[in-house]
Image (tube, rainbow, N blue to C red; front, side):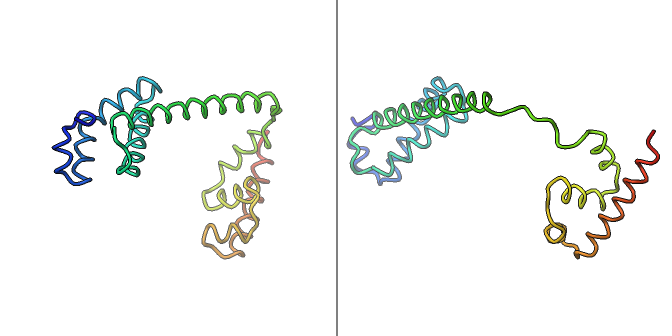
Length: 167
C-alpha cells in the first residue's frame, strides 16, 4: 500500500484518477489538521489545496504522497506563522514611528460638501480631496472639461452661499 491506496489500484489508474483517489482520501483530514494548526478554516483549505498542487507538480518523483502532503502542509503552515510574526513586528514598528495625524479637513466642511447635489459633489471630492486635475476628473466622469470647470464653479458658489447662511 502506498499512502493508504493499494499499489495495484494506483498502477491501474491514470494520473488524474489516482490524484482524485488521493484527494478523496486525504484532503478532508489534511484540511482539518491545518485548521487546527492555523485556527482559520479558509486558510487551512488554501494550505491543503496548495499541498496537493505541489504534489501534482512532482507526481512522478514522490513515493509517499500522504507523507509528502503532510510535510508540505506543515512547511506552508510554518511559512504562514513566520509571515504573521514579521507582519506583527512591522506593524509594531510602524505604530511606534508613525505620528498621529489630524484630519486634513474639518468635519463641518466635509458635511457642507456632502450637502451638495451629486452632480457637483463628485467633482469637488475628486478635485479637492483626491487632488485630481480637471482633465483627470473629466476622463473619470466621462464629461467634457468645460462641464467639470462649470460644476466646480457652481459648487464653490453653493458652498459660499451655505457658509453665509450658517450661524
